[in-house]
Image (tube, rainbow, N blue to C red; front, side, top):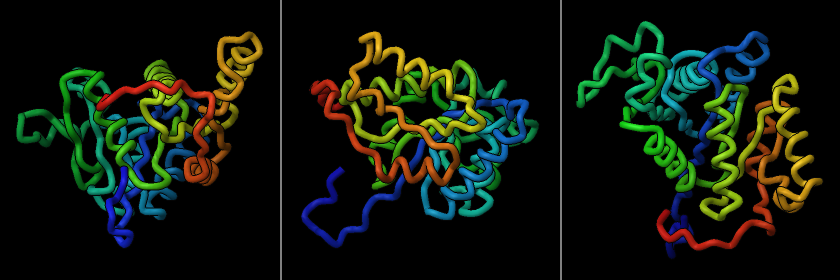
Length: 229
C-alpha cells in the first residue's frame, strides 16, 4: 500500500504467512526448518501470520518467533471448529473476550478465533497484502490443508488479487512432486510458461526470505479488476 506523500514515512513491517502442517512430520529436518524460519524471521523483524495452532510445524514457528521478539510478532487465526484439533494441553487454560479457548499469548502470540475457513484465509491474506517489502507466503511441509491454502494463494496471484510472493520451502525435496507437476502443466498447456514461477522455491529458510524480497510479478498474470476483493 502507498505510504502517502511523506517520503520519510516508516515503511510497514514485513509480514509473512506460513502454511505448514499441524504435525511435526517423521523427518527431524522439518522441525529444524520450522525453527530456523522462525529464528530468521524474528532476527529480520518480520511478523508471522499463521493458522493459530500450537502443535506440529505451525506451533514451532510461532513459539520460536515469540521467544525472540515477543507475542506481538505473531498473529494466529484459527476457525472455532479446529481449536480442539490444532492445540496442545496449554490451549484449554485461557479464554478470550468471546469465551473461546486460546493458547498462552506469551508462548504462541496473539490468537483470533473466527467462525469459518474462508474468514481465516481472508484475514491472513489481508495482513500480508498490507505488509511492507518482503511480505509474502511461505509453505513448509504439510498435508491437504497446507496444499489447499498454498495453491489458492498462488491462484489469487495469477488472477491479480494480490502481487505478493509465494515460496515453497522445499525441505528434503518435499515439494519435488509439486514442482514436477507445474512443469508438466506448462508442457501440456494448462499453465502459461510465464506463470510457472508464481510459485518460487528455496532449499532453506534464508533462501525463502530472499526469494520473497526479490520476488518478481509475472507478466503473464490475468489483468483482472477485483475492486476491494
